[in-house]
Image (tube, rainbow, N blue to C red; front, side):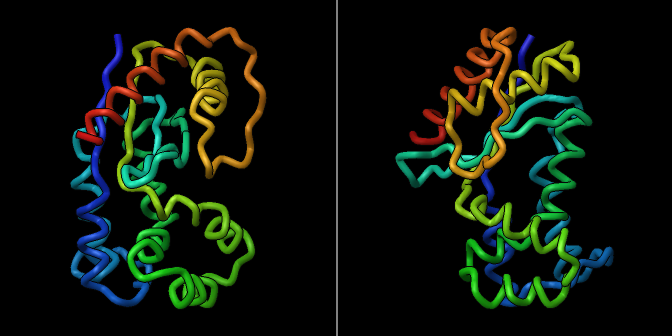
Length: 188
């Protein structure tokens, strides 16, 4: 049994437009970063926290597939983690790369965080995130389906693309079919 849905990143972009500087990451609900977290969590509140696959797309582009990912620990937790770690991409999407990325480099000079910023920057063109869940998926199946989705969707941001075994191609094709239906729905 499959379930799927998608959400627009527009509410995040709308909030970011009101904060013309990259906020410090803190846990205060009334801070700019805290309010950003609340907006992100409101988008994902109905997503099941089970392992499965997701696709970032750019609905304004002919080559819409931006990034394919999987979540072995649960989709909700994955999105909370991504929104926290990669929050700079939303400011870059709204205001451009130069001052905000440089601010982030100054605020977080550790090389691992800096590399993470550089690796996720291309997601800043994303407009929607689609997700598909399938009941009873083990870790190996989750990994193999993601590998197949790299081939099927050829996303522009995924740099690492391990070769799939082919064992779960039929599941990847069904997940892809569902992604494509959502892409068509968004394009309406």
